[in-house]
Amino acid sequence: MFDSLQAWLSTFLFDWLAVVITLLIQAVVVILPVMLAVAWLTFAERKVIGYMQLRMGPNRVGPKGWLQPIADALKLMFKEIVRPTESNFYLFVVAPILTIAPAVAAWAVIPFDENGVVVADINAGVLYVLAVTSIIVYGVIISGWASNSKYAFLGAMRASAQKISYEIAMGFALVTVLMVAGSMNLTEIVEGQKGSLLHWYWLPLLPMFAVYFISGLAETNRAPFDVAEGESEIVAGFHVEYSGMAFAVFFLAEYAMMILISFMTAVMFLGGWLSPFEGIPGLEPMFAWVPGFIWLFAKVAVLLFLFLWFRATFPRYRYDQIMRLGWKVLIPVTIVWVFAVGVMEYAQLGLWFD
Amino acid sequence: MTFLQFIFYLLAAIAVIAGLKMISVKNPVQAALWLVLAFISTAGIWLIAQAEFLGLALILVYVGAVMVLFLFVVMMLDINVAQFKEGFTRYLPLGVLTAAAIFALMYLVLGPQRFGLEQVTPPKSLAEAESNTLALAIPLYTEHVYAFILAAVLLLVGIVAAITLTLRRRPNTEVLYQDIDQQIKTRAEDRFEMVKMPPTVEQPLPEKEKEE
Image 1: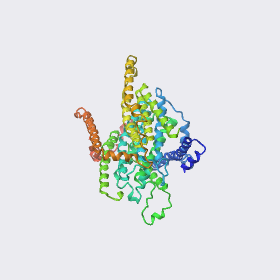
Image 2 (image 1 turned 180 degrees about the vertical axis):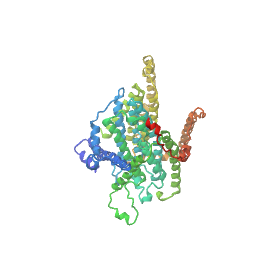
Image 3 (image 1 turned 90 degrees about the horizontal axis):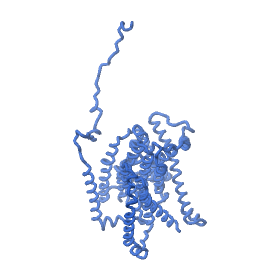
Image 4 (image 1 turned 30 degrees about the horizontal axis):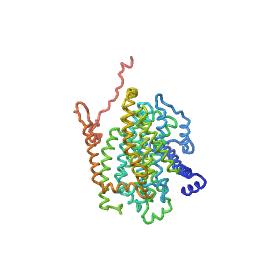
């Protein structure tokens, strides 16, 4: 669809302009729904946690509170952005941008449905996501340093150390997926899980599924790994000094990353857009009419609910125990499992290597 | 100019400017950040050259890990910039001379008479479906497997050496250590005991006090 659009545009425009316009349209088509999802994810979070704590949650703006995210956005937009004294102005402004840009850029390679419904179907898709999301840590560090505030600095140090520690476990978990799938292309990874519920990679890589999701929680600084925020000790972590829209951008990035991690987990371990009833006689034809992206979104929704559920359930980890969990538990488990997958691959064990 | 060329010149310009800024900027934190920008734009150029694995690995390893650690160190240092710049003019002639000499040497070795467009055949471009990672991995794990494993072992030795150099246990009289396994295994019964106690019933005040 976009190829024909580009071809049509280049009949009366410069070639490069046609490419740029097509790319922009593609970007908007992906980013706009993601941002809307972020807005209503904040609403869902408040509602879900509210009900878990026997409260109502927001219910004043619009029918049943559904317009709450719009009210929040308006409020944040009209708030003043306070610039701390002696702060580094350029870096102070660049930090939120550096946080949101990678969180949005990573969406370029996420496939939404079969037949290549993806902005950029590149060979090194998994590596691209890993590389781009690793840039987010700069937003955290720079915001903490440029704010010229001790709380922000401490928060930035904690958050960035945590992020780069858990990135290793995450990377190893992805390595096992690559070993089983034999490809770094996300579409091919999903295609490799075709067959049935038992062909999905969550089963051969069950420990990696857990490791990836836990690392994802830590990467996004969500509870129970939210020491970067640590209201009781360092106020709000690296973004203490940000207000108004600058603060909201950090928030958008965090939630966009949550959705991204859920998408990656669904694509790599839960069969992406494949139907869970595949290969089951009776149920498979009954649900054959459901388009693939619905299944993908349903899986993502479940994973996002887990994010919110964890936040309502678990108390915050102590900082040294976060580091211990990352370095002494998750990383050894992943390394062992890399070898285990190697053996499984060599022995052609199970359903996954035919 | 095609779109690809435009992107190439844009990234090249950013890389050069970032490199210059990195060595000219006063604040070390900002210098590190300019270096990060140079890395990212270089990774972009590698992507254009169809070396997507190298480009992404550059971002993942250097930008995502190495430079973060650099920044950590630089941020925590308390550097006096004025002191840092002392004697700049005094050493300037020598510095310029050294820089010129190094540039001349590099020009002689890497100059156009050795690596010019006439000397080097253009690399054959890969088919779109061909995986760069696979093309890199197969020779690495077949032809060069011993060198590859040797390099890995060398890195491992480096890690072990660095950790043993910094690892020191001080006696418990100086520092208290935590036994985390024990902490995790703790149960409520180990820490407190429920004791049955008779309730203390408040006695009615004696008559005498009431009168007062």
